[in-house]
Image 1 (cartoon, one colour):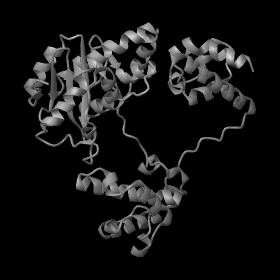
Image 2 (cartoon, rainbow, N blue to C red):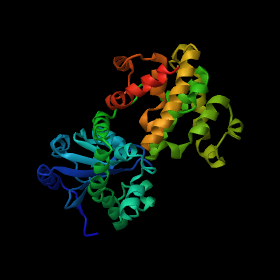
Image 3 (cartoon, rainbow, N blue to C red):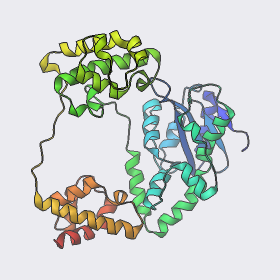
Image 4 (spheres, rainbow, N blue to C red):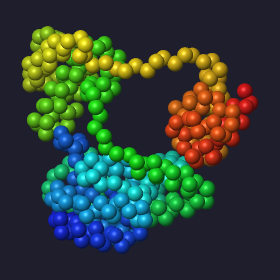
Amino acid sequence: MEHIEILTTNTQIAELAELLAAETVIAVDLEADSMHNYQEKVCLIQVSTTERTVLIDPLAATDLSPLRPVLADPAIRKIFHAADYDLRSLKRDFDIEINGLFDTMICAQLLGEPRLGLADLLRKYFGVELDKRFQKADWSQRPLPAEMVRYAAADTSHLHRLVDILEPRLKELKRQSWADEEFLLMEKVCFAPAAGPICLRLKGAGNLERRELGILEALMQWREKEGCRRNSPVYKVLGNKSLLALAQRAPESAQGLRGIDDLSSRQIERYGQALLQAVREGLEVPEPELPRFERQPRRVKDPAAEARLKTLKSWRQKKADSLSLDPGVLINNALLEAVSRNNPRAIKDFAEIDGLKNWQRKELGQNLLDALGNL
């Protein structure tokens, strides 16, 4: 691969934006440092036209605003692979929105590709091998090693050719409209910090009593502060399994810390007093102020709806097989459950089912009605 230019000044960014404004299609990717620093951030942005690949260093060039109009222009196609995280990160860090999206992973899903990773697709179609070592690399380090620069550039430099292979197949199978709708929905994602106690977002916390949640919240708040102090991802401070066990056991002494899941002797020595203090704080939270999960009312068991769901799952498997698609890509379980509960009797009834896409209504609506009608 030829020399890859890395843009490090605001003047270079402005010049690039002017050049990109004349393009009809560009490929974009980014690299972040979520596994190496407390506050994750975008550390590199890769941009490829059909002729050239450049890398943008947002840690050096701090004004990316000239790129906003280009990336928001729907007349310029933006090729990403697995765009969800990238779109959220661009919005969060730079207030950049993407219009004109083409996501090659969504495309691969709708074509029934058995492996969806970019490395898998590049290997399959071009014999290109991406070094997976760099997927978890520290992209905030400077200067970037030459091999990491080459890896980053390869993420976008092949995307134009990949589209040239995948898009004609979409059209041949008459699934272009499916993809177009999925792309538009993906464009609407954004970064929104979650509100409320952070303990409610931890997997497994739903099994705890409210007092245990209060302890867990105090422990997690301590872990956030410690991660920030060390500039380290919080999972490297203390794992979630240890936090859950601490919240349930509520130890009162250093001896009580021993035997906690995944809590090492070194961690006890380093953090023991801070953990015990957090436990005490959680125990002292007044009862009305303890975190609470907003429980959804338990749905009344409906044998008829369950029978319909079983029929719909059987229909889905056969339909997905006939289209060479993953059943969950065709229509996921949550939507099938909604259909079984609503029991639509006409196409117009599908409008009442939230989350059902237009292409699914058009392509699957009558099939769903036929399957339900046979009960």
